Length: 179
Image (tube, rainbow, N blue to C red; front, side, top):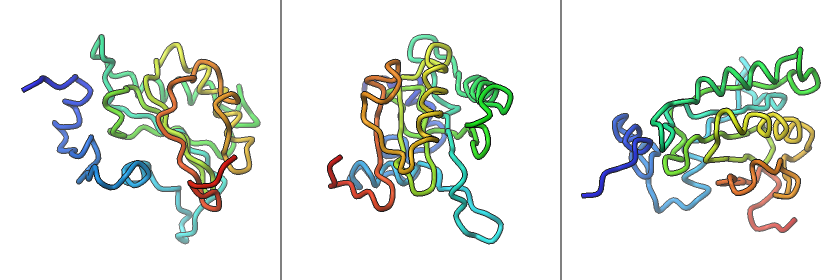
């Protein structure tokens, strides 16, 4: 039996199955698998969806494939600092940086997702917590400025090229539509 990479071993140690998705089912298809682990939009106290929140979600269990180091918490801290009202006042309001234990991107750690109510969601993988933080901040700025969250690969920062694992259409932007 082949040995799992350290990043995948973490998922199995925490009882995550089906490619890291809790109660995972590989037959759900791409969107179904991502929908089952991307956090849902933030709810207001009355249960209504709060569309003003842009979320950056960082896996805190991903281990670097070479060093085995978990850098998700450090990336969260760095993103919060760089996206603070002091440094990015236009982006900081309505933005939350959150850590989550496993987003099932075990074969491409470190994974980072961008999500907002009514917008296309993005999942990036193979993120270097030190080298890619500037590009993640630039993408956060771009994502916040887009009404529906949709952008082409050419609009995303060059450092994120080849690191997009998924672009999940938001409501009113069906998966079958072309842009």
